[in-house]
Image 1: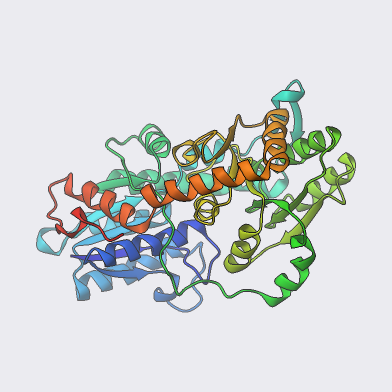
Image 2 (image 1 turned 135 degrees about the vertical axis):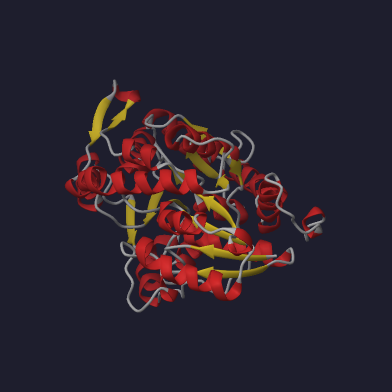
Length: 399
């Protein structure tokens, strides 16, 4: 079986969890016997931007379909809407099976750009969207929603990384039968971003003692203000863990100001934008990974932490509860609840041995459910559900 995977963002050019998942799935399908090609921006012409990709990818994909004749073309996210529309018009044997894997619903992504409230402080507003986030909500998300609906409605097979996301896509894009192919980790990919010596040197002081780690772009749906409020609660209760934040974004200045307001300046280390390998280095030495988001798909950083045996403290939102089991592999807390998050942080830092037990349980759960051959098995089940012939190799996957 020949499979063409089409994606706007791919490592090492882009630091993207969605792009990483393209490569993880490609590995799993290749191990199951498929011939797999991945088409990104580099194959659409010189210096093609992310914004231009949905249009420029059309001719590149048509050329590959004409010359290589893949059995399946799969697009990722809403960026592939125009590709799907074009290929859906083909007739006869030249038309491949059209598959779309969408990591999030952009309807929910748009709704997540809103004031952040702390329900443990009488629903106090602790953050508001900054101008760039408001522009994203008003100008960019309508296009993503339109392309997302087009992608979902014109595809033969619709996929999502979690049951929650699948339901969101069905409700928001007006489709049925969205199947789950979970995000995974573990493929020995060669396309990792090389470690930045400059970042490593800058962060060396942050890894001399146990610390909590948060990873991701600093946008309002990541809930970083709630985490800082929780850290202040933890300090008030006699604990002083350090927090390392790997990531940058539009909220950095407001988060700096909140740190000073809460008296957390010495407790928080801003590592800035880190390479994928640098994040992995920080993660391996962390006491716990913290994910205080208000909306997600199925975050890759959670899977990677579990792969390293690092316990996860996360909001019980989106697909996270399908991966993290509260009380067994980590802690799940209600979103926008700083006191509840503080309780989990104290549990993790006050009993590191128990936290490591949860981390090891997370690694075992990952091996059982979230490796590339698991994604390949779910993928074959999805394409087989529409009567498409699939190889039998996946019935006894490696590992």
